[in-house]
Length: 194
Image 1 (tube, rainbow, N blue to C red):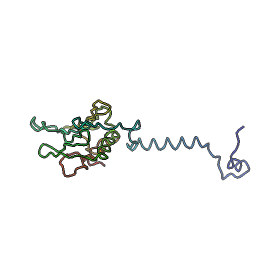
Image 2 (image 1 turned 180 degrees about the horizontal axis):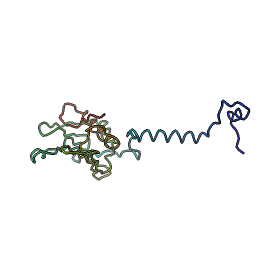
Image 3 (image 1 turned 30 degrees about the vertical axis):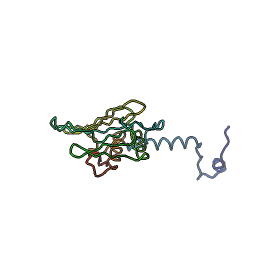
Image 4 (image 1 turned 90 degrees about the horizontal axis):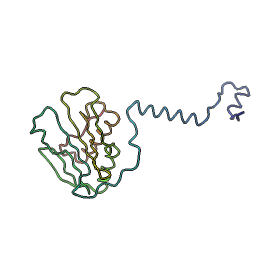
């Protein structure tokens, strides 16, 4: 026989307006299930859960992160463009497009922040993110992250063409954060997200 709580005693004592309280474990499990389902239905899952990002590479000649944006339906000359954003060990950045490229250096804190944001965006795992709909004239974003001594490549087709969810949204938000480092550069990495 289980012990009755104070509310349960009132119900058994003839106070019908009170109901039996559910065990706390069941209430917590129900709340957790509701919160998880809301996150999955809205497409806004929490950032990647796992071990913290390792320290970024320190070799100034070694790349830590590279973002390349390729456009379709253009000729071979237009496809031969440099990466839009390359972050080297220590924080040196080469960024821009085929018409305007700049070299600048991030502070050590900014460098670690960008590197950790790349990990949080899921770039430490190679994957392909296709567009959910049909594309005839899209783009291909190639994100290369060097982590744990190896490169990881993420590709995304036509990123930022509407409502992005899940991994595609995290990648678009990361690229937009990179663009905000130097808004004066024509990186083409700021995505309008709804």
